[in-house]
Length: 263
Figure (cartoon, rainbow, N blue to C red):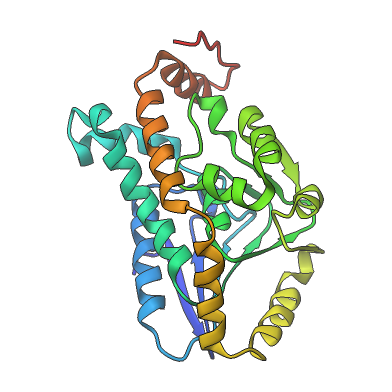
């Protein structure tokens, strides 16, 4: 397993730690592949009652490492812009796998939970956030949409109006507002994350594991996630070749306000 991801089994709990703290756990190809491997390891492990995902260092995750876009030609060829639905499918497949593991999954959030990091958290069943955590999907400020399930899963959680507010603006909200909107299950003091996790795990252990797994499948099956993911991929394939996306990436790298032209 890559050092970018740490795994640990503690009795009946499998823990995955995003371990790139010097980059605020920004996700590059190496971390994403290692995370996928860790999920498969968790799914193969017997005797588990829960899966926990957390981030090392000062935050859960600042999202995708924007420099990862520069490496797409190496992986998908020089015509990668024409293959964006394939690119999106590959990213989506990891979080769909996470969502469909029958173990209840809990994301422990602190610091920042943004972009792809928030999409990962949304693919978990429950989210516990430390007070002061900032959450957001800033993709529109790069000329994109959240296309790794963020648009679909956020809408499922909070409804169209709230989802539009967050996705249209790309703004960040604090953990307390996220709790009021139903994005996180509870907010605790920063030093209380582990205690809150243990309390949740104790409740889960009172339930029959087969019943929990089946309830998860039924609840998740009530929403047409597959159709939502397909629409996300289609929309992103239209946005990536635009001048606005190029401007979004350049302005981000240059730390300036973007000048979008709708082209």
